[in-house]
Length: 194
Image (cartoon, rainbow, N blue to C red; front, side):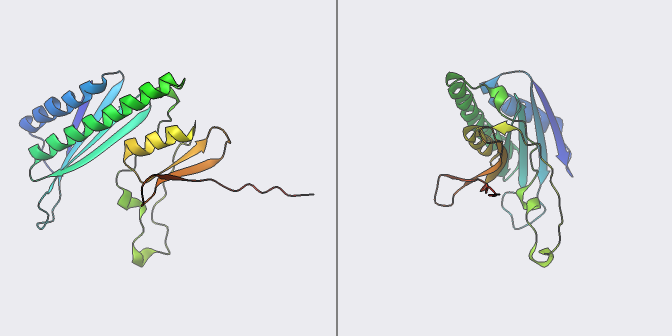
């Protein structure tokens, strides 16, 4: 397994690299498949009022799926430990979904590869710039079932996911509801009578 460790505006020491290899490597052993790549970004938030300035972002790519974890901690070692725990839970959830799909006749290869968004805040437009388009995001839309789209939403930790419905060929959006559960947005197709 390939674990790539990098730091944003911080130096990655040998001790930090060893801790990441140990903890994140142990977490990834839950779902040991190949090819599996792991990108770990270590960074500190500069806000002095924040009690947890250390941030660890883990992106795991396995079988065309992306599992993303971001955790905060009082120091980098605590953040690495909590990110490893969360990655273990996410990988177990993914493994369970893959096993369930195989038993129902689907394979993990049917799950569409996606381009992760670095930060959901990048998708929001500040109030003073609400009339300007400030970012454009292009995604690959691959046909999948609603169930597979829900799995991708959970694995990425996003509130919504855009996909092509394999049954209809139309673009749909699944999203987390504030009251719990999921919702789906489907386009209305109107026919013109001639």
